[in-house]
Image (cartoon, rainbow, N blue to C red):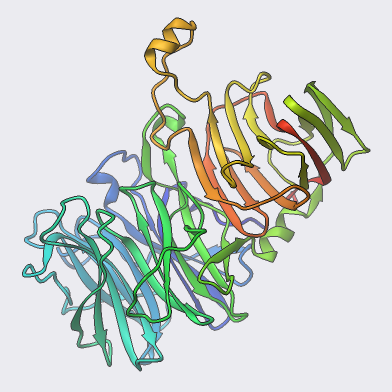
Length: 493
């Protein structure tokens, strides 16, 4: 029994296309060709398919769409789209990629009677960009849904306008249909002038708000969302923007029979499986996230209960070792750090390397920051910190060491370190807190994956390959902190 990360043949996974129907979770997704590294070979994607009844046990199905299978329109890749059951059939709308075509990216269609074997539409492509308004290159990621208020099908397409600031032309285009056969161009439904191309868009209504969700590769490689009282906008920016943060990419969702909005996304791998190499397209699926409306347009993100139970199946033994400062242990499940004006930290020793750590954190007299150490050396000069910052009212994953300017690095005898493309705070989000607040943290470390759910409100997903001697610990800088109900668990072996 295992949550789904990637196919059993080891192929890297890309964009998710989740779909729920008749009690079954379907995860369609793009796979990356074996032994590929760069564009264009690496984006010659195949649509894959796995199914589950419980979000935990998954069965691999046969591939769904193969590039160049019966048509040249997608000979260079079957890219992202969406799935719907309507008009008595299962429908896939996807992006056909053909590098040398006048329109390299076109909207294509495939149908099935059983959601296993799909046939490509002989009339493909069904939609191409109208170059009176849009560029001919970026025209992808169709998202189809039935708008009950309008009583018609809506299709969203990620596109770029053909004029305006060159790096800000990304828009979401709307097409409408009564029967999934004929589509009418409505026009631009979202025009933020803030991104190259809003990839993998989706739209849905929860409560009184509509949500428009999309991914930006040109700004922080993140899936973000906007909200509105109307599906036509205006689309506003939430305070707690993002389904996750950096490296939880191309997130798409489904609604299950319990009315839960469940998100799936992939965390990229790096070339040569090294923290010093470039990020790639494709990687492993992160833990599914559940999005819950907060009533004001914001979404809170939590771990689905099935996944939480999965990681709580087996208790692990642990001990604690203080390294610096004033730290008191109270049995195995509680400790207190008294660290006003200075730094205190220590590490846990856990009997296995992969685990979920859960705890409740309460800070007092906090002037600076506190949190968890993750995958660090003994001096916490290298690795990561999950840091709650009082002044900024934010929580972040900080990568250590932060690079110095070459002059100061040379002057202090330090190595000149190339800057991380994600910045020194590789994940960061607004998180208001005050002295005495109890913050629940679930931190899951699995091989190279870091996945953290914080305060039943936000989540971070990241990856590090570097092996360090101390897997996890606690710290406080100029504050007092209590850690309660500390547990280490993992899935049943």
